[in-house]
Amino acid sequence: MSIRELEPNFAAGTLRVGIVMARFNREIGEGLLSGCKAELTKLGVADENVTLATVPGALEIPLVLQTMAQSGKFDALVALGAVIRGETYHFEIVSNESARGVTDVQLNTGIPIANGVLTTENDDQALVRMVQKGGEAAQAAVEMANLLKAVK
Image (cartoon, rainbow, N blue to C red):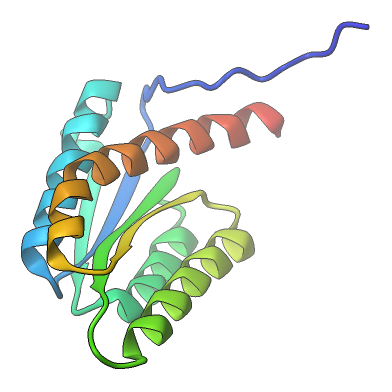
């Protein structure tokens, strides 16, 4: 039996991508953004097809993603930020609720969202991962936008 398999497609074409970046832990956010922008350019997303919105922290990301998704102006979205463990339970709340919010927006709107919000034990872990994670989020956004077009 031969089945039809949809291969990963990273060709950006005219895809429109929105990025929401948390300003909390700004240095890490900027590193994530650098990796994301570089990968989007490599995949062929034109600069004029990328829109960046910044928010205070990770918990504010889902609301702006939702607004962008509902606008009809974007084929894919990317969430960027960093939640770094501290000495309180706050880390778990922010990490879990931010991720849940991003997932809820994606499922409720049908717009793919690549979650590039790092959750790490310390600054060093985030600094080591930020550029790569930003690039991976860009790849995921483009791949998922193309996949959803292919399955419709």
